[in-house]
Image: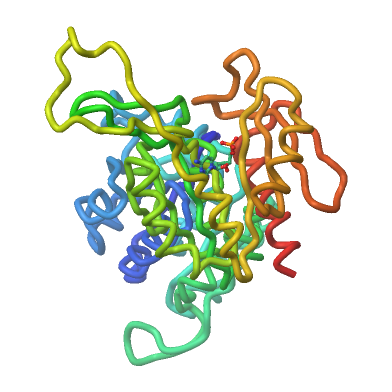
Length: 394
Ligand code: C5P
């Protein structure tokens, strides 16, 4: 299982509905899923490997013996959090029911025990054939979720039960089996992440150790929960994030300008970025010579969060802090001074947390009890903070 993105294997069977799975793939990516497409060899008659490769940005393989240097079927199976087979033909359903392993996809199905969503699409006479009915019953008995095809017009002139469901219906079914909450639909969440850089000259800057991983975890989980996400990214890699509107900034001044545009529109601000407390009074246009580089005169940066706290209209505001001692006292003081609803204080004693996938610290709110967290994933903290924000939004 991946620690950063929820990984889906999108299995594609040889049905005309395969072309509709191109859109399905896009929508999954937008919702923050990492998607590896595994088509059956015959499905390439409908949509070719090049299309899947271009859309997924990942290698596409149909047989166990292809590209073994890049992906083994066992490691692919181990990486997956969910399987989505769409479209599933009568033949593919029969092969899975029989436990066959005659292509990469059916190998993966055997090698994996993660939740499986199968989306059949075929002619009604094939769907209603006793062989298919029995195979579907076998798969359901095995714990796989097999969706009911929709009733309506088919590829030809006839109609009946066999149509591939709408993308949104498939995604809703996947959300159900993946335990994905959709409680932030219609909410706009603004997140800042990474660390600002304050230029000393064209080469040097004052920066900090913030990796942006916590902000990415919040953005990804907010997307999965249906929110519209704006990320103001300061010197962090957000290339794994699909579906957010990302504004890249370098300095506190640039972040301030980006916040001025996005803050009035958001419902929730999660200020996760490490904003430099001070910046050089002057940023030299030319590189400062080594012999003259002996001191830097600093002036304070504006406190962006405190400024926004004064101008807020309806927004829920969540701040972050990093402390090495007296966590609770200093966090409570910041909560009040910056006009926040919630603050999370990272316990960074001993250089912990920066660049890691886990965090430890304390959540403080204005009214509720303090919540101490000991070594939780940044995804788990993201969801706790989103729960708080959602509760306060009412
Ligand atoms: O005061 P301190 O830097 O510990 O507060 C941290 C919180 O304030 C974070 O949410 C950070 O993004 C924000 N902050 C800010 N502008 C600054 C410094 C910090 O918005 N100049």
